[in-house]
Length: 144
Image (cartoon, rainbow, N blue to C red; front, side, top):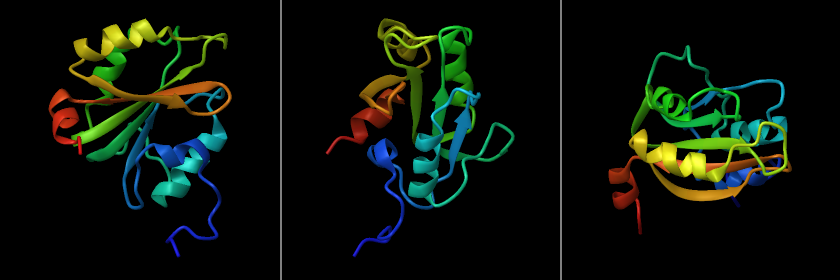
């Protein structure tokens, strides 16, 4: 029986590769975020998400980003501030046709400029898509 037996289904958050005990920092929160996805992440890690005031190293970052949030490269570089070596940034952007949609080409152009590689993209709910970004070295060593 799994350690999460009887726990709520984490939904799409279960595909993020997060583990119990990880510290996950959330950046870009606003009233439009997917609360079910947030709850799923917290269920997987067994703790609350931390914010930019956490002040220590984190295992992963969840970055909510919208078209009018500014320069994506700057946002990604800021998200790297507390990220541990080998950690991942999960970039969450509104899906096509949703308000404040971010074009995938913007992500594809911004990630390498920020020193990151795109590894995975998936649906993260009805309104949000998720893109996993890692440092290129982590992407190479993380393959099985």
